[in-house]
Length: 207
Image (tube, rainbow, N blue to C red):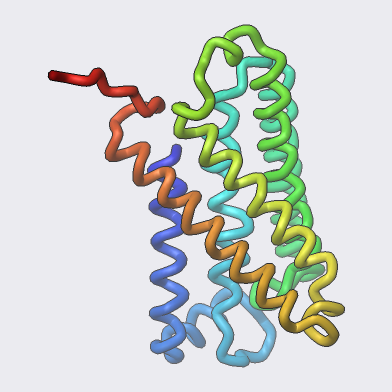
């Protein structure tokens, strides 16, 4: 699931960059999925892949490290509700696929925050979780970074209009911190793949 998440993120980031250059292709896809006038934006890429599709492997992967069955069921239920609600809002044009979708963004952030929160609750309450060394547990760092990133973008989204027009420095600060945390999240996955294990093992000293 971690690799799938990394794959989706890499795909939509590269696709978004390509569509900035290839406006003709961007326009064709826009006309295929939306009835609104084409304004040259590629926001639909992030609406589909970032806020919706990438959330599926993200939540499922976090769920893998939660021992409490009820917590896992809560995450799966919220994921199902989010997918259903996001599709209804998009298909009914309440949230236009080619424009800003504040309701979908809000649900996406809350879903990520709740999933991470349940992981930490389980980490300090489950006997199995108490047996692990969190500082050597790579998913611990990934989920920690995810939680901070989701909280920051949630706060920024809630105050976006005010910050953009009144506190531009703070607006850019939130964006830079969010991007940095996102890069660190992806770096944690790369470390996990390279390490070929969930734990960073302490190497024995040799003479």
